[in-house]
Length: 326
Image (cartoon, rainbow, N blue to C red; front, side, top):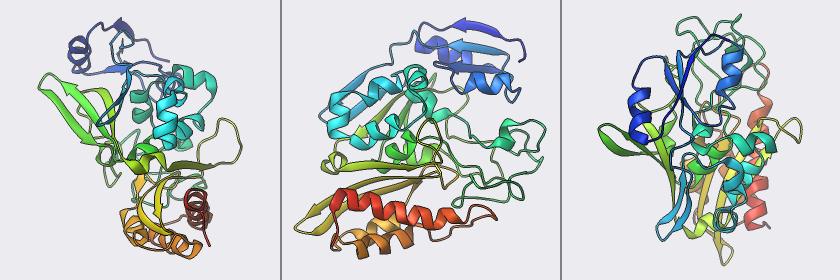
């Protein structure tokens, strides 16, 4: 690990001013950042601790749920109103990491975490995320864990966050602040597709600070579920995950939300599949038809083609859990 300077920020303005300087990284829990520094993947010149900022609120408002950027994953997961009104969020968090990491990791940090691609984390291999233009070793390498949706010639790494998938399904927005003021970024636009610039991962500008995530109030949010399929039951990233919400009235799908994790280069919303389900009977046949639409355009590699069939089955399973079938 390289040497670095350390300081604490006591106000948002101080943190924003600090992060505008080259080589500066903000951190809260540091559960991803410190790992990557130990591996010499990242080597920031200075770290600014933002834990003293008053950004840890968890509020249920008339307009929806507000989660401060510094709220801990474990606190959000067990919040009774979150579990009651937004179960997909609580379930995604409880299926993330380990209890120890959930106690440390922040909501803002979770959204900013880097890929778990082994080639990115091993500096002996070329990686366009780590060194633009060096190539992607995963394309012709061991790509069982990698993406089949949203891929490019430059990168096929999956996005690791469970929580971001749940947020995308519920139309959440990220509230960020800078010296220029505050702006709101829809979560579906917050993470970027790799294209030819996989090193550019989010829409967050260098001088901006995440202050909160807002999830709009919606009757469908209470009818939501997070399904995660992984190689082992504890502390493992998703092979496939589904964040689903389903509102069924008189046996017909009135509304639905569907987002996928573990299979794409960013949290992957599938609006075409949602549109296909609305107005259809709540049956296995309808769910299977939506699942087929959800994987259109998939580009599997040599070792991860199984994900296409697995995610279709996971979609059907998640929707059946919520709406039943016949």
